Length: 98
Length: 371
Image (tube, rainbow over all chains, first blue to last red; front, side, top):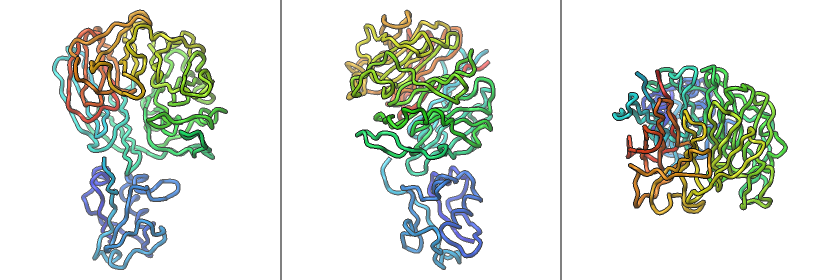
């Protein structure tokens, strides 16, 4: 299971805890993780990435293992530490006032 | 005994205010969707327990919320607003072409008959319809594909379709308004549209009397006379007596004819309300005095209403969808401010009081009169 940490507003929308565990069929990529996350929590569709283009929303960031994965292609394999469940995949709202 | 339910959308969540017909003691429930912008909430005329809410965020985009119990509980509905075909371009602020991009839903207008049918006015300007209680949305593309579409331009708040009026007599007729394109009418249920801006005059566009390009802020209609429309334009308060074919100015003795809201008394079709705002550069009331103006003559002759409203040092704004009326015998008038107050009058505007005063900035106010 892959551990995903959601920001506050997406937790309340999904009705989920801060950290959710998502089963992702191999090979686990950024894109396949997001697809599995949206299937598990349908209200998240469109809030992390565009529903048509699947492009990440501009004020959403992806971090894992101390790295910024926001700009990696969707087909990028997830780090092994994320796949094994040792490290979480973080969905983060950009620091941008409001 | 009747009850009143006031639906308040704010910059940081939704609130539901309820009272009995006396409208003296109010219960405040919320925030719902705390931290999210709630541009609009509106209940179905056919089933008042069905309410739609537009929830959005600069970070996480558009969410549609639906309640089946009068706003006590909510569930997310569908949030995919895909323009029909190639979206094309409209004008950017500097006149250059800019791609049509969905940003948010500004206004939901539930059908008069069917709780599962609801229209959405969105930014960038288009009208969508759902016939399955908000699960799926389809654009009515005839509006955006009107030949003038590439010339539409955003107002300061964005290129938003903010007003949808459904004609209760001619069920095929829909009016909408866009900042800054103007007013449009469909006579075939939303299939085709025509601009209805003759008589509008706007000094901020190259041709002040152009067919499109006018920054209409809001429109209102009394259901007993759906051919009579009232409009608060960027500047100018306007009236049409022929379903928008021709407009004439009714600003009369208003201290300024800039403003955002306009509404009509529930039982007096010639009684109209506006809140004058200093100017397009100064979005607050003249002289620091918050005053609603009422015309009982369908315009031109306006009376300042100030009892119970702050008359010094008040510099709030009242945004375009933030005024509504109830249908009780003594008509209630309600409006919300960017300072977080919701004011109500239970006597047609003669006397006002704040029914809640420290909410986040208010974006919209709607009222349901319940049996």
